[in-house]
Amino acid sequence: MPAIAEMLARIPPVSRYWMLSILVVAAAVQIHVVNPYQLYFSFKTAFVTSFQPWRLVTTFLYHGPLGYELLLYFLWFFRYGRWLEQTFFANKPAEYLMLLLVSAALIIVIAPPFALPFLQPSLAFSLIYIWSRKNPHEQVALFWLIHLPAPYLPVAMIVISGILAGSMRSLYADVVGCIVGHIVWFLMEVWPLEMSSGDGWSPLKPPQALKDLLGDL
Image (spheres, one colour):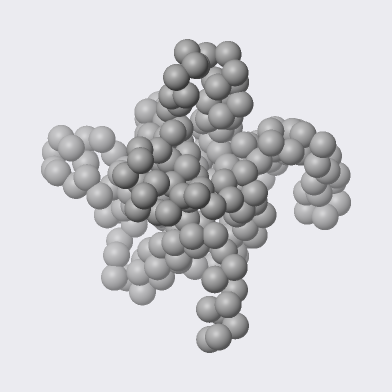
């Protein structure tokens, strides 16, 4: 247990609690405390035929049952999502949380035509896209065999999803994540230079109350 606690302590706070929430939800589904049909997002189910607003959150916390696929996801998430929080958002948990919230809101808007019930994979893929744009000179290895520049990683993963996925939904989830990742990257890198009026406002800028709550430095 001390080793697990020490490992968790090394994970930055937003990534840590997001990861733990995904594990808790997966475990709850695994032992039949919660049914996945209670977690997916549908605007009609959440706000029209019934009032279940928690689906706006739970759709980003369920990545499937405990198993190999979830473990593989965490390996990807540790590398890319944690890197963003530890480097670009070091000591700025409110800014990183704001990035996730804006990304999630964009996914909610873009995803309906693709009929994606669970949106967590798209959110994770958007972080991979942002990481790839923030590290243009990095070399990555897919399955320890294929080496390619980081900016090509999202495209390569979409191609692999198209080949290996059992359904189009996995491919669509990656495409939505790629679109949202590009929008958020634009807001991070291009907006402050070319679109801002000079007042320092950005759609990704967290409110002061959130910064005070999470202790941004």
